[in-house]
Amino acid sequence: MRLQRVWAWLALAVGMVYFLLPLIATFEFSLRMRRGVYSFDAYRVVLADPNFQATFGYSVAMALLTILMGIVLVVPTAYWVRLKLPRWRPVVEFVTLLPLVIPAIVIVFGYIRLYNTSSILPLTGTAMGTNLLLLLGYTTLALPYMYRAVDTGLRAIDVATLTEAAQSLGAGWLRIMTRIILPNVLVAVLSGAFLTFAIVIGEFTMAALLNRPAFGPYMQLLGANRAYEPAALAVIAFAITWACMGLIQLVTRFQKHTHLPR
Amino acid sequence: MAATGGLSDRSARSWAWVGLVPFLAFALLFLILPTMQIVLGAFRDSEGAFTLENVRNLFTPAILGSFWISIRISFASAFLGCVIGFAVAWAVTLGDLPRWLRGPVMTFSGVASNFAGVPLAFAFLATLGRLGLVTVLLRQWFGINLFALGFNLLSFWGLTLTYLFFQIPLMILIITPALDGLRREWREAAEILGASSLQYWRMVALPILWPTLLGTLALLFANAFGAVATAYALTGSSLTIVPILLFAQIRGDVLGDPHLGYALAFGMIVVTGIGNALYIWLRTRAERWIK
Image 1 (tube, rainbow over the protein chains, first blue to last red):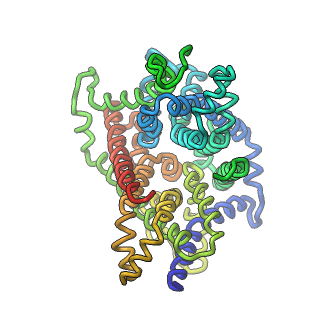
Image 2: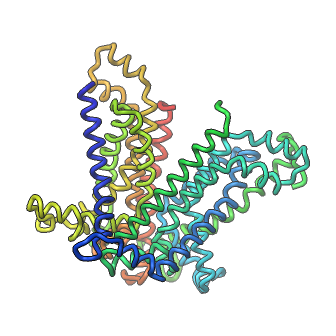
Image 3: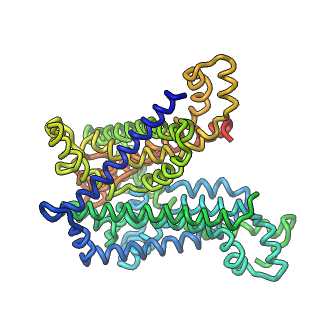
């Protein structure tokens, strides 16, 4: 048993060295901008860069819209499948897993070919159309995470009884969705939403190929031209990812207290 | 939606599929049709007639080389990710470590498995790049010059090492529930029958975990194979793995033949498709044992 513990500590130590070294190194590198002393100059330069502010704002707006789009698309669908069409579940689940199978670069390649200026739906012809296309692309990328989160949330509640109770009190479909189902799966929706945010905020491939001024391409461009600012950006990106995951844990813990133990 | 009676109401049930129309329309327009466009394009010539020429044109040394280096990097990072991830997951679940360690390890895995793309490349440049912390310290403390030894982030090992940063945590997240599913009774029964620890792992635990392990290997492989951003930010386009080649092709038709681009993308779908199909098939097998 003692030997086992030694091995366990060893495995953990190797893992920790591998994961902590890049984080420490990145942070240290980001402080090196001023010669000879550690300073937060790189952060100051990055945060003051108007391009940073513009692209970051763009990506935050994109992420929020993606979350909204994902909720509107996924919650009613997952609910409806659970309530009325259980036989369709494998099909819908399969479709939601497809974005994990088909690389994002292939999907966006398809968009460029299918929605180019000479097609029936020339979305890439205008800036607004391309924004819309990027938004829909992000919704596709978020689909697996969003659907799984919401479906898990729906499993914990009695969808049929809640629906019938609401209907017998005279509620319509919109009211059932917004007042009964959504509040009941809110924690699951929020988990999916934070994950979506973490994925969309730094996404590179789709934004770059659709030529949109998003945060991912901005980071790449800065990385190609500057030395210390990219490290600062990496630290910021890591902090955002960490915050999103932390928020997921927080809302999940919150849910444990509001539900009676079963 | 007038008829919303019970499940026995046949007329209501026959119209229920209408509720799926928005979702299916979305999936069709922005997931399935774009992919079909690429797949069909791979089998069409410039006049639109059926041809196998595009796929055959993939078999040039340059493109095959791209696939080969991509497959090697994806496999190496998936394999090492599985081994190291398994070791760490084993340490925190069955390794007799303090219980409080498990929470932070799982949370960190959730973060690190999502920390990919461009920032990950920056992190490794700051670590193992020419001025990176580890590179500098190795030179100052031990006199080891990594770059003189032929190490380079824009290489097979450099990219593999970088990809491990999201591969290992993903493995930890997937394998931990499987390790939790190993029942204590199995171990006790094996021990009572005189099995050593090694025999227990070789003859009981590993055969049960085998489908999960292989399935996760396939998933990690596909995960690395489709990744574009990290490699692009690390290497520009000097190491032509398949996604980078496709990226350059979409941007500026570097292959000089649009239909070869379709075939390249189709090749990617085939590789990641096989990886994921293996994962799904093996996972359903794994679920027979681990509930």
